[in-house]
Figure 1 (cartoon, helix red, strand yellow):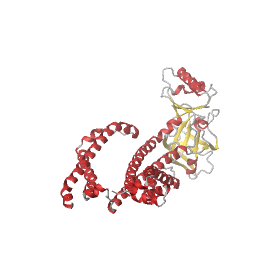
Figure 2 (tube, rainbow, N blue to C red; figure 1 turned 90 degrees about the vertical axis):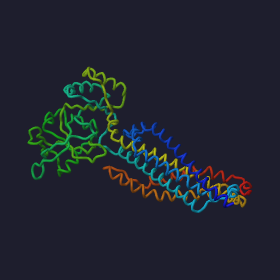
Figure 3 (cartoon, rainbow, N blue to C red; figure 1 turned 45 degrees about the horizontal axis):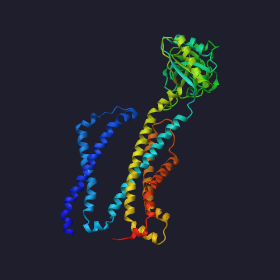
Figure 4 (cartoon, helix red, strand yellow; figure 1 turned 180 degrees about the vertical axis):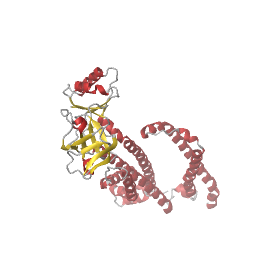
Length: 475
């Protein structure tokens, strides 16, 4: 019998390898089709411009062919050489048992798959937690119900007319203007600032604003006052600074400090107020020194709405716009929408992480289900004997589940420190960052354990209700 098996081992190995290569080739064809279908959507999601021309490059063709050959050989070698060892009688009797080496190899694969899955779950949770942290932390200003309009250079001179007409509506609380979008940075020039040692030059971020800017954006004043319409001197002789600027200049009392632009020819002013810090440069940058300079005509208009009768108020604003600017289209954005655009890259990154996490979990669960089926098949007689001696369904389910929980626990132990290390380094790129925390690690572990139970529950229950007589019956 051994001679017969030995004489047929070659054709059997060849058959397994050819089938493995064929399946790998079919997988390649399916993957290319999916790539063609999904690549435009991926480019749209990731903001990239990948195209299929790279598939025709010699390097990619060689790499793909090499992957097919390697994957096909590796995929077919193990079952080919493993199964060809057994005699036909052993195979027909169903007495193939798992060897320790083969069992260990399968368990290692499961551990690797779930290690990747757990790590991906942690990474995804951290990305979304960081995104939520940036979106919900205090920006230092109120962005709700604020409409943004844009004027060109020729329209700016009619801004006061538009402002007066818009303030006729009781549902419009404030109309103000600035030269730079809030949350999107600001200009920076050299100012001469008063210090204990006299005037010193400093590079200061500044924004030009109309009166009511501070009130319209809900920015808090720490000391002093904001620009006022009934104070004409504010136009040329007053500035408002933020807390960071006051602290960096070492001003214990900033009110009245002198500020000059260059030689003082354009701005020769004094500080009239200190406002609380707000994120003029967005949530991805540290708050910098900021000075507000008062000018009545600017190209960016902010309209603070009451939040009541929004549709009627928008129609009113559009009508007033057309009266003042009949040749210009009425276009607007909400400040909250524009401000949230800065998070677009992280939102896309979170979605991509989620997609790959789901894919990794799916592959891991398929591998786990296959291993569960195999192990239940190998332990059928053991399960039947245990049931004969009084073991109930709960005992059998725990018996089957225990080995898998151990494997998944090993995966969690490996994945947690690895994911923690990489995501801690990733968070270092942010000025304002959340902490990973035990809760994220615990949630990732819980999700993995639940997925494990769900994956193996069917096979475990199937084994637990099997008729003991069928389980222990032999040929």
